[in-house]
Image: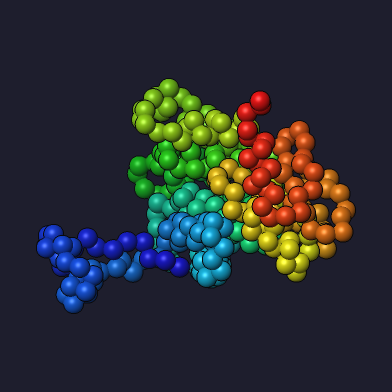
Length: 303
């Protein structure tokens, strides 16, 4: 896992402007500010998602390996019997938990790992991590925590409901589980209240939720054997297409149908990529550069 924070000062309570004015060597000669020992599922999930996204954008295998390692740690050390991810090792003693952010962040991490690797086990993990979400349900939206023995009841967070709505909707497109759509819509019902939506006029996340729920993500699928080098090149090219709101999948027929098998692809003699919308798919694309070329042409205004 990953530790969550580091002190701002070299010595607790002592202003460190002069310390941070030094170069790297000068700072190291004096010491390094204390790193907090706590390892939380939420922050570890954020790091996994970041590493998987880095691997997706750059093809860096070391980033993907680090993401996998941290994910296995979280499953081993933070997954509880009821399916939620504990905040820390002492979660059972915390009167205020469990917390929505821990399971949500881990589900996002697993989905990012699925997209970066094409390995189905991570999609299954992402889906399973969302199952406890109903425990956080309010009349509108979702609370930051399950009400425990504390005198103050947890409330909904704008940031977490935005993240939950966007993730649940995207995971629905990957998994085909339509109950996740209801989760996204329930979070949006909270966000759409004028008292919430107008509270922070600079928050674009609510508009992103509305747009994403109204439109299917960009859908890129590579059909080819897992051990086919050319299929791997096509998948790398598909991952390199910019944007968060996209559904990228690698289908090896030997693994059985895709989890959300909503498109019928032709059987071909060699690996191919397809770009699909809600209405139709492209013809087979056999060269990696062809994916970007197709998307550029599709977005060009008519002459």
